[in-house]
Length: 122
Length: 111
Image 1 (cartoon, chains in turn red, green):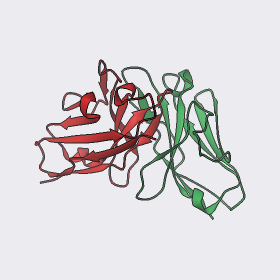
Image 2: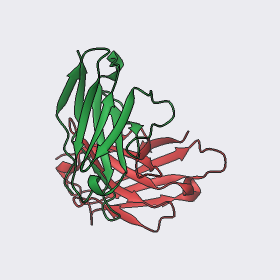
Image 3: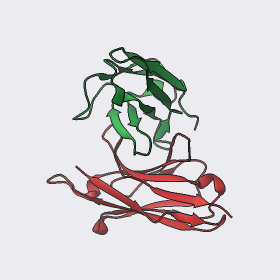
Image 4: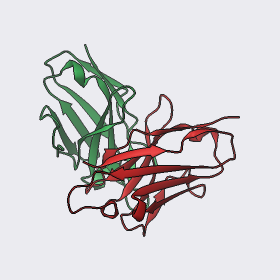
């Protein structure tokens, strides 16, 4: 079973930047990180789940939810089995627990990490 | 990118069955058989329970089942157990430019 470990969260001021990382391991035989599309999903304190970004397994396509488009960038380094989320111009409403996750064959959020917390506050 | 609509809460007694609805539109849930359900216990990451409307990942009890009719999907939990108490979220594929939309979540209480 794939394991995902997020890192890079913290407390930052509005307008600043932060880069989240997600290290993947535990692939089934014959599979590598490059076989998996990846999501970032966030959950604000006491709120529901919100899809943030997706990147195709080959990195050719990237899509973002409206509220982060132009500010956040999803990327991957298959040589390091790592997914990234570069977050610029952070706002208070970006405060959340950020999960990375694999994209299932039917677009489901398949395997989830434990999340990393981002707090944007002055 | 409107969220799917779920009831805020549902409840049932041990052994009973409960059903959680998830309503979308003809542009998302109604157009694709890519509905998923997730269970989230307090302080834990969500766990995939149902994908592709009716499919259960390995290890998920068959007490959990999914269905869909038109723009509404449903998750049924049969034979309720105390450990089923959790928040449940639905999601649906909604097209390439906006691949995923979630429901607002439903709190399941086992009385």
